Image (cartoon, rainbow over all chains, first blue to last red; front, side, top):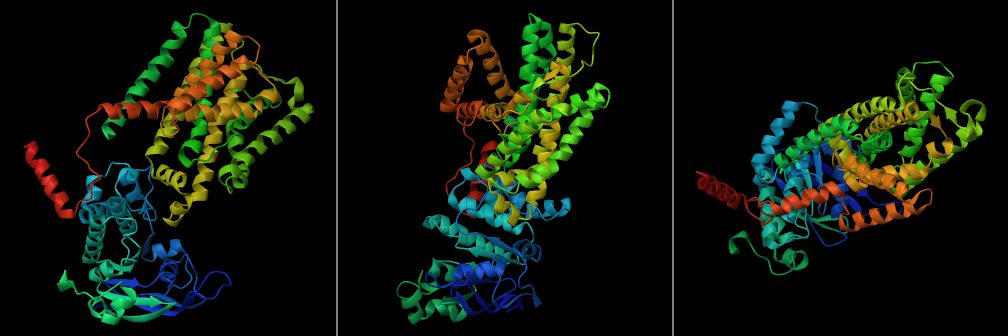
Length: 247
Length: 345
């Protein structure tokens, strides 16, 4: 396995003066891999992404990119450091075209040649973006909008993309398309930290999995092993365990 | 669709240039020409307002006061400082642009209804200042601004100002068009859609809002200053009026704020209606009622404005393109594109 690219180490975090949501949480994302965080509602999955993207500062613990401590940097500086976040739900600019949405992802880049290169790259990775380039983003289906968001997040050439519930509100076919695109992002060299309610589907897509409960890592390891664990299947995956082969 | 939009913009520009060049020749009398100048003034001011309103979505009711400030600054620079008319006009616009920096710094920190209220407060403060400071501004007695072309007859005077306003409108539209096509404009439109999201993507939202507010104030002041030189008499009650600022907003919304020519179309509809109803109903307030009814009808049947309604009509009449919102995998999409390419061959 490749070396760890992005690490949260012993993070304690919460909101205001309330009890911490994360209580010593740690996860590592190796380069070129998909790491999936699953767990019940309220486990702290979205809080992990807020810490990772700089939207929330941890009370304790560190955030590391390639071993460099970036704890406490704001969202814009995290973006410049190579960490890109795709928010939960639909976050496209609905009244703007797909092209404008994608180009906004490169707002921190001033080199026109670099922008053109990234545009060509995301069009290649996400054919639907190329296909609907001039269309208003708000007129696209949910799955297509999600791919526009993915494309926008890749414009800064991030080393890691944080995906918050990408299948939320999508029908099964759109969900399949979205997960297919997550794999394409990984195959194109971008590491992915994926938070997902659709735990079984996410673990089938991911390389590594991490089950989060009550703000701590309950269990982690290769995603296929987690899927095959009968106890885990009963507790967190909504039923009997399955393996990729059974589909 | 992009080609249609390009054709519509080019067609609109040709129509507008033709109208601007021909109107003085076909206007039957000086009154109609002067009414045309009033409409053209509205078009300039509404287009200037649309730098802020159209790009950022911030609804300012204070732009009438910025026009008034431009008018008074021009008049005072001519009367008190002895500057030539058009040098005063330019200097006044620069001054108002400078004044817009602290005003914008205070006003643009708030959003939505709070911004509207701050913009109204600016109008009221300026009204009080210009009414009370009579020794400098002339107060309620008004300020008489000398004509820049004293030798011209009244119709010639109107004709000269018609072309001056035409040039200013062209300049404002050109600037708006350039912003619309730029990276700066892209950031502003993102602010309009979702300011927090735009900021998260790295757009310097506050700096952008400030710049566009100053640009908007500059063009608004040029419009107001030109009006002062044309009309020759300024009264604070009319120059610093919430009603005049509201007209600008209505015109832009009526024509379509996201369209280059939207505010011009809105200015023509509202401006002509205002003049027509004033002539029809004399000095009564019925012209305001009639204008309100007209606006109500347009808002009911064309809520996004006249030009977007026309664009939607054109789109409905055109055959649909092959794009779909059906979910497709990358493979299905590739197959469809290959099939389409095969059909074309």
